[in-house]
Amino acid sequence: MQTKKLETWYLQHHLKFAFRQTTDPYRIWVSEIMLQQTQLETVMPYYERFLSLYPDVVALSEAQDEALKKCVEGIGYYRRFMLMKKAAIMIVKDYHGIIPDTYDALLALPGIGLYTAGAMMSIAYHQPYGAVDGNVIRILSRQYNIQEDMRQEKHKHVIRKINQSLIEQANPPDYTQAMMDLGRTICKPKNPLCEQCPIAETCQAYELGIQQTLPFMSKLHSVKEIDYIVLVIFSKDGFVLRKRKASLLEGMYEYPQYESESIQHVINMLDDQGIIIDVIGKAVEMQHVFTHQRWHMHIYQCRLIGQKIDTDWQIYREDEINQLPMATAHRKIRRS
Image 1 (cartoon, rainbow, N blue to C red):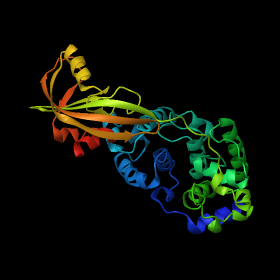
Image 2 (cartoon, helix red, strand yellow):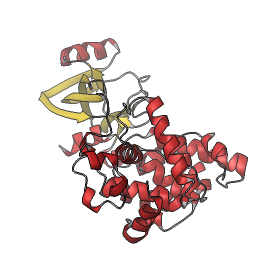
Image 3 (tube, rainbow, N blue to C red):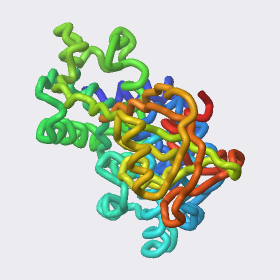
Image 4 (cartoon, rainbow, N blue to C red):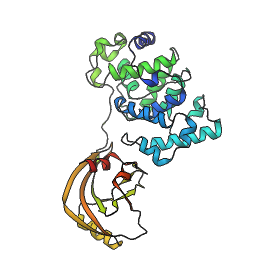
């Protein structure tokens, strides 16, 4: 693969974003964490807001958990930001607030894996450490006609080795960001713009006309379907919420919900706990899709009649709810 042609193309056509205008490792770290599992267009307003509230490692290390979750509400995968805070605390404690500039030290921080460490080392510190994501896997699978299953780690390792050999011949920040942009704009999963590709002449898949079949990815397991009874419960003082304890969306606020298809079953269960509710009207049906789950939510408006003091339910006024971190699946309930 001709890395020089790729870099020349990047310098002429690269996408211009705020995090491209800096070599500050903190800002690059924030952008790379936000771009995990999230589209670029979605990330940009969150990126600006995050930096306005947490402009450096020290500020992030001192963030209140609920304020941090509120800042990124709606972007999903909230655990990554809790891990960022843990990493920031470690950086303040062990590195006097300065993000380490070695690959192994970055990998030792919570939430920083092979890709993020490689991206930070190459972009912020100009060191030849490869960063392999879906874009890189797609580009190199097509360039070298690699047809093995890219869901298997052993085949991803082959891609990492190829990518590492290429970045060692290149200018690290330009190469890493060029691969990102090429995958986003030209070597796309569907309908790649091969005629515009700066490295098309070395692409074996393009020569064979099989570029749309690569990379090969075996089918994922089916999405888990879950039925929930969701209770939007109000009293004279406001609405009932609770903080999630499950690993998915942990620490986000929600209306009480229970894995069940029967509202009567939930009413009876609550009654056994000393919680009395009055259901008002029929259920409203909503769905919310996560990567591996689809929630079928049967939403009931309810009035709170009586509640034991030792439950994990709390009552909040509507203006207070707007200030709490809440998962999109439940935030949209109030908008419906």
